[in-house]
Amino acid sequence: MRLVKIDGIYINVDRVDGLSGSYIHGNTTRDTNIFVGGSKQPFIVRKNIDEVVAIIEADTAESEE
Image (cartoon, rainbow, N blue to C red; front, side):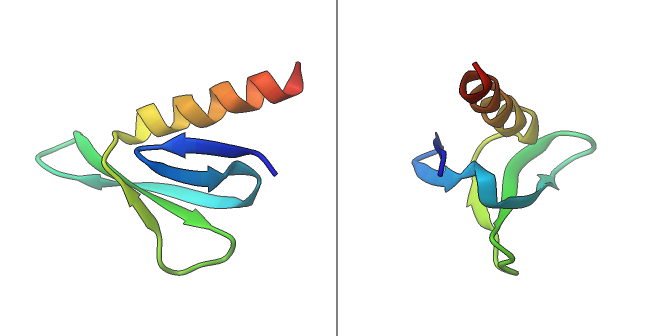
């Protein structure tokens, strides 16, 4: 199990099923929905989806070393 802290919530990145952004005014995402472990109810974090992806990718790169 690999836990990553994103906006005060610890997420097990091995169980992330998907991400979606909440779009406000064009292409600017303000919140990111993180779907974990088959749940229909996402965790909502107050970060741009690109920031969330970067955090998860950085953790994945660290664990591969």
